[in-house]
Length: 156
Image 1 (cartoon, rainbow, N blue to C red):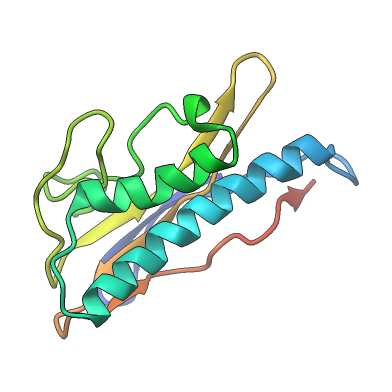
Image 2: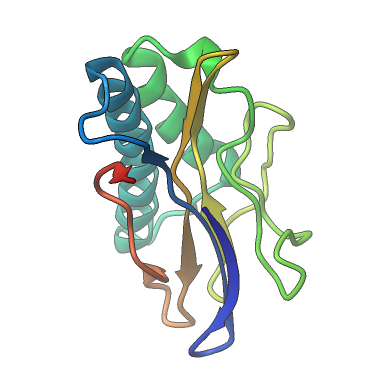
């Protein structure tokens, strides 16, 4: 599922949710979803902790925080893209990307910036999982997730 909408406060919302057609997803699918979700949540927590301590937070570091969780779960070679991208009025912006794979983004996240966290695992010919949320660094330096966060596979 993909959506682009203008949410209150003028922040764009670029999300991906995933589902399974059926009543009970295979255990492997749940394991993969949980690995991607854990990577996403680790990235969010990394950003929150850095800003709470008043420390600089770089795009490449956030990518590593996410990617390392997925690697530890055994799926690192299936995470084929950067963790996230900057978001502006055009959705994919030219600000800080959450990337240490395609490029090493050494720019710092700053108050006023918006970006996605969107890890994914892709098993060619079998299945794929991606969970995407957006974060905004408020002008007071507090990072926040700007919408709902998928916690479970959507059963269709």
